[in-house]
Amino acid sequence: MAADYRTPDRLLSAAAAEEQAQDPPKPVLAVAATHDGLRFWQYMLAGSVAGVVEHTAMPPPCRPVLSLGAALRAAVAGEGGVRALYRGLPAMALGAGPAHAVYFSVYEFAKSRLSDRLGPNNPAAHAASGVLATVASDAVFTPMDTVKQRLQLTSSPYTGVSHCVRTVLRDEGLGAFFASYRTTVVMNAPYTAVHFATYEAAKRMLGDMAANEDSLAVHATAGAAAGALAAAVTTPLDVVKTQLQCQGVCGCERFSSSSIGDVFRTIIKRDGYAGLMRGWKPRMLFHAPAAAICWSTYEASKSFFERFNEKRRK
Image (cartoon, rainbow, N blue to C red):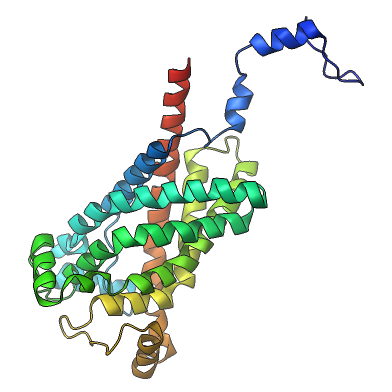
């Protein structure tokens, strides 16, 4: 006998309750639990796949320039053709997998804990989770990002990833790979705070309008919006980070200290306040599709593991 939930007292008979307990879980419950129930290693693997796909699908952003056109012309015309756009790609691919594995797994873990305290769909929980994720992942990613930046310099003295690593270790020591770590964290903290809060909000808004809230188009569009906005907001810090990573190479100025404030003042004195926004258009145009690829790949990987876990439970 089916239970009638529309009765005023909403009471179930003992027989109906027993029958309901024996029924298999309804599909609706599985939909409500979307993105939950994954093991820690599955979040890590999904994030790793997303990171590798993102950084191999998108050419690494070029060195700081005045315009997107200048970046493309300098790379294609004078530095080895179209292949120059992908200089540093092996370094990025090598660091992207482990870094994104840490990035997304820490984010999911922190979001779960903070959402329990602050409530579901809380922007503050999403922003704080993103900050925690970037502090952990940047420790993995910063050395390879430094290698990538140096390989992309005009007339770079390095022939490849291994040559760059050996030369920097010999001439500058291990600390050179982490010279921009503090700046990277300071930059990525607001970046990820804006990025994750925007992504989660955009995903909910687009999901309400779309027929399928978990469609690829929803995740890609939300990711693109989040990436573009976060990139524009944090461009000044990205300029400082890149200056620190490339100091002393190919004529780039070497700073007396790695203090973020000192580098800010030097750039303003040399180039004015406009120098802090150098490259903001290429940065936005890079991060929008990169975030779309990353988020859609990550969510697709999570969906795969959800189906995998569901089949194993049957």
